[in-house]
Image 1: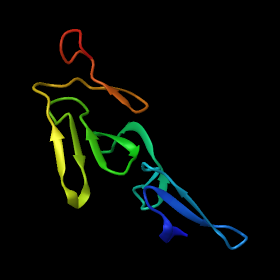
Image 2: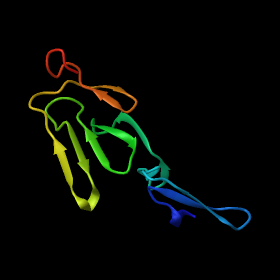
Image 3: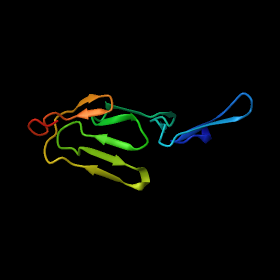
Image 4: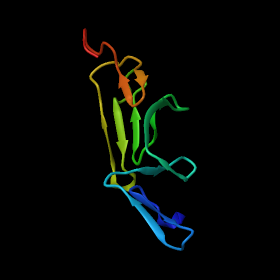
Length: 110
């Protein structure tokens, strides 16, 4: 029942004719680039444009790949967007699952 899906849950028709609802209090799935529902995946990866993005989340999050681009930018569709800047040049981050570590942004500080 594709029309019964959203970020927080899904409804499945059982062979008995009953409906089974699976609902979460936080997003459990998001539409991927093809428009299909897929589980939330916060693993960070380098996108085709060189930015860093989570694999599949409900909002549009872009992290800096280093340099002077904004540290992070978050888009909420028609609801708006915001970005965070860093007062200098960021190093290329080290990615590990859902983490991006910017080594030595200040001497001794990651």
